[in-house]
Image (cartoon, rainbow, N blue to C red; front, top):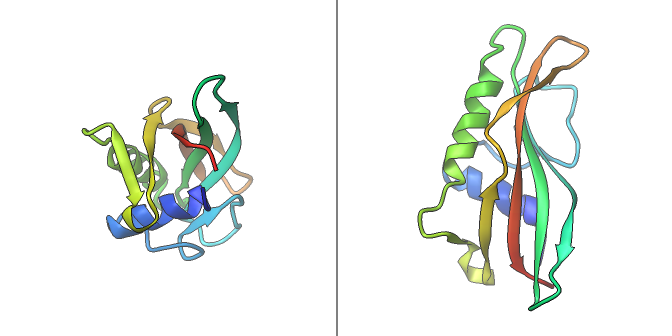
Length: 133
């Protein structure tokens, strides 16, 4: 499977939730500027299954507000959280590449911490279960 985080960013961009990759949304790092950013960071999940050819990949989505608008991060995290609810269960992120899976939001958005510039960071974790590469 290709770059899962980029696929998620492109999906959020297509839904007009973010402006795009390396504009206001970043993968695997959080830049110091701009203040209001969304980040996606993949981390170790449970891996493959002992049956079939599936695997679960985990990532965290965070949204950082500014000191002028500290609630932006909370609102953006909730907007993304709600956008990742798929009533059909199985989601096809990129129909042209047959990238499908089941997205599970592992908890609701919550405040994680304030950074050294006192900007609030909210986030939640997600699991994406799909076929193995």
